[in-house]
Structures are given as structure tokens and as C-alpha cells.
Image (cartoon, rainbow, N blue to C red; front, top):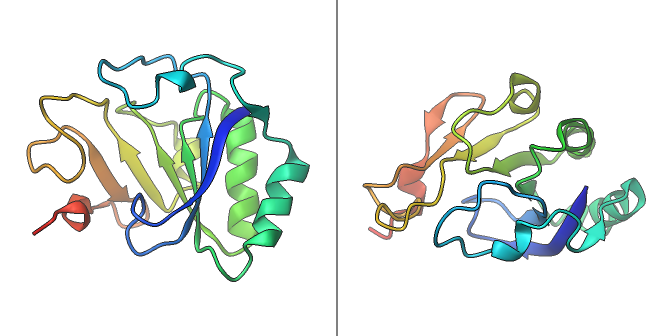
Length: 149
């Protein structure tokens, strides 16, 4: 599994300081995608267990969540990374353009964002969006957390 970018982000999972991994190889190719460089499998660097665990250690007691922007197409690797995050007492989140996520992956998540980017419907902050941001444990829709009002 290749990651193009790693960032510490504050807005993608409201109320959490998230270690964000942008995974390359997305085959959805949504029109208007803000990250078309993630379409090509192999863009970036290999997300080795060593790199991943090093970052988890580096941000221990600072970060509260691990966020994967994609990666569900690498099911086993993603599940292993999510499990490791949970063992380190971190919440977990996946952003995907898919509508349905495998139960094996969902079982490892705290939060999940689903739905393709559709420019005319906007993102999570738009009340008309097709995208959903949910707490997987409670199945509560949390889109309201992105509202500017």
C-alpha cells in the first residue's frame, strides 16, 4: 500500500487530531476530484509497518485518531493498520467515495465517510450532499459537525 502524503489534520474528523494517510490507487476517478494524483497506484512511498509504527510513536499522546483517505482496495493491509491504531488507543476513520464498505473494515472503524464527490452536491458541509460521515459504533450521522452554522 502506497501513501502519497502524511499530514496531521484537524478538520476531517471533528473533535479529533488525526494522523492522515492519503493512499494512492483510487479507481473511482470522481469528476472534480481535488486529489487526482491519488488515482495512480504506486504514487508516493510504501507505507511499511516500520514507517507507520514510527509515526504512531512520534504522535503518541498528541494525536487521537488515524485517518485513511482511501485504501479500502488494500483490505488486509488497511485492516492491519486500523487494528494497530486501535491497540494504540487511537480512534480510526476511513474516507471513501464508495457507498458500501466491507464489514471486516467497518468493524475496525470509529468513523466513516462515504460517497463520491459530486461538485453540484458539495461536501460534508453542504446539507444537500450525497456524502455521509457517521460514527460507526452508534450509526449516528454526524454531517452536522461540518456545518458552518
